[in-house]
Length: 162
Image (cartoon, rainbow, N blue to C red; front, side, top):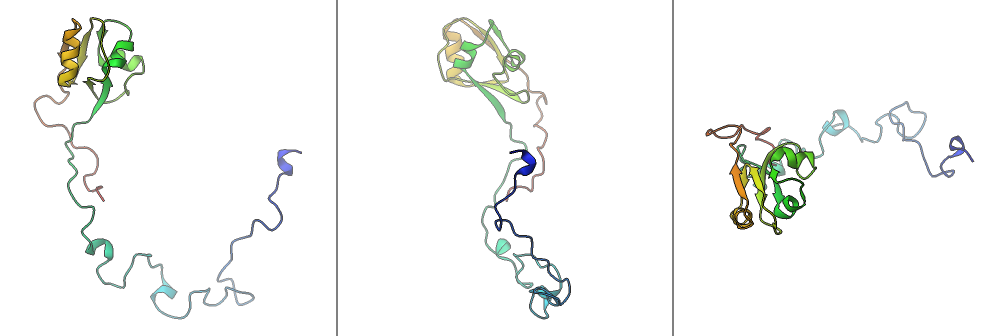
């Protein structure tokens, strides 16, 4: 059997009903839309309620505030830093070893244990991560945020919180 011999079982696939193609068969004239009225004539969305205020607008659900200036970090834990090669750990080395995503600010969190002395550079540290790195004899260095003292740039369209 070859790939061009494959076909669905007889009767399993039916063609789409071709509406409004004359009065010769089913689906002619009004094409299953009944007679007269807005729904017989134009395209009416399923959520349309005849000019009444739609349910989506009447019910105050899923509103709220999505902060466009939220600062999001790519997180890396101490166990990943322990597994990383070298004693100088920075976002570039973490990215080259595939431990963090290639974009974004890096934050070090305190899950896992650190048994060796390392110098870690990142944009942010949790308190437990700071304590663990310094307890192991290492040091931390906070990198400056790319936008300086100002607030971060707005992300995307702020009106997509529905």
